Image 1 (tube, rainbow, N blue to C red):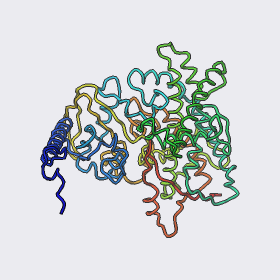
Image 2 (cartoon, rainbow, N blue to C red; image 1 turned 60 degrees about the vertical axis):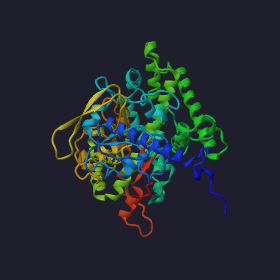
Image 3 (cartoon, rainbow, N blue to C red; image 1 turned 90 degrees about the horizontal axis):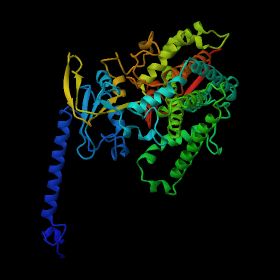
Image 4 (cartoon, helix red, strand yellow; image 1 turned 60 degrees about the horizontal axis):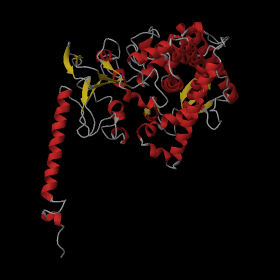
Length: 529
């Protein structure tokens, strides 16, 4: 019989001496307990989950969604249970990560929304995935944000929205013609996102950058190897690789990494060329696309207010990414919900017939008359808010007035120390029964009579940093949906033996990467005439 290992015998010469290991383990446990207690104090012992890792950092964001700590678990999978007792909870990781205050309350959201009079700001690390090419309106803060907003604001005007309307009409007709929908009669689309993403990219390409492309000839990167849509999609799908991985990882000879590198390099070259081209065309007053107006406004600014080329490129990416990603996701969700809610679809169809009829295409002046079409889009965005988290950090010691649980009046003051992160869960806000009756149901009638700019609709975010492209997106959506729903009845494409309830559970679930959208939506389009 052999002797047991020395460390089990307590050999004082062994680095694996059992008493030493026990002592080290005890110190680590005590340290974790003390650290966790300190974290709990910093969030005023607000109840909430106690996962091992933060949902906003490594390794939490990389762990499968079946674990408690991931971002998707916190505010999507557990959206019905996270706020059962309180609308504001704390997430305190006991191993790795800073404590977080996590809220689904709009009152708290408005208190922390970035602005001159608040003690909160948007930390740069929270937008690092969108800083790959340079500072931009989405990621900027304070005076830098105001500089970006000052330059970008003039590009978003009624003239641009008229252009969006006309280009959306043109793109819809190109779609129907190129895909031969009228010849097919009933049209089966296995993944509606393939259409909504292409539509949104062609509209943003035309209206934001002045491209002239057809449905069957989408814009491509300079070397022609990728379509712009493919490049954007690849960059978005692999953003964690570029944000979190060491640089040496990006040199490994794996296909996914090489494809990501190619897409990144193609996008970088494409955006640099756009900046150079617009500067060369400064004297062309006929160009009305948003980016040309942005560059012109920037050149007219005093030097201290001008954006650098890197900042212009950063905003090119934001316009391309946010300008088509969020709209495409929400259009897909809208059509999915309307396919399941034929009564709502019929009500919208009747309004389109009344306002537009069959003898003409809808005009920009019809926008405000098609309020039920807008409401359908709003309600889909409420249920799948693309900008699903609003992250703010306290710039000084301050106090938040946190509303008491539903059914109790008043607020309770909580001291927030400098550096504390507060996360507004926009999914939680949109599913909060304080604000919405039967919040899980698709009810566009909630938004009948609500204007595009109303602060009652919060899925475009809240506060002074609310989405600058809101009217761009809603103009495109109302025009496209009005044409599509006038000409075609939308139905769900069911699998064999599948019920509509099963289809909803399978399809209308979250697909979360950089933004929140739905999974692949299979649909059937039946001609109305």
